[in-house]
Image 1: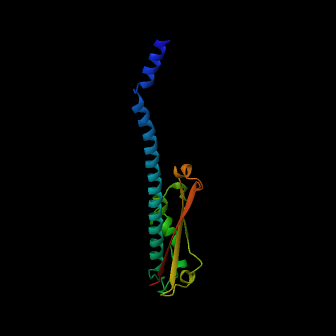
Image 2 (image 1 turned 60 degrees about the horizontal axis):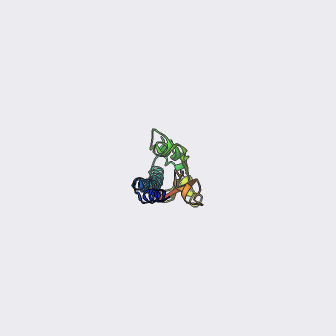
Image 3 (image 1 turned 90 degrees about the horizontal axis):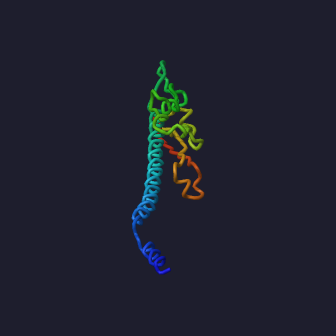
Length: 160
């Protein structure tokens, strides 16, 4: 019996492998934090891309353009349209800059619709771009965050 107690006591005091267990626990926590930082960084990147896209769309819409007769074109009469200028691959190419599940949309808020339809110099034109950020890992660790978030950016410029 005394021998068994000595063996159990020696086994209880051994620390071989404890470093490996501590490393595994710390590594799992560290990798989770790094993945969360990457997820937030990606959301910040997407926000910057849609902000730049709304600026590009507004700038394209407010620049003075005329038809073949020299008549000023309203932003809703531009060819290509503001939406296609921002979204199409041969123009500004927003769809290639965002993930495939982002579903980017270019709209014109109803708060300042007159610049979009009149084309009168000095009228404001608002261009809004929205996209969906699907969380990779954060939604699994933050309750109530949801699996995705809709990001939105609006730029208002006056027609030249």
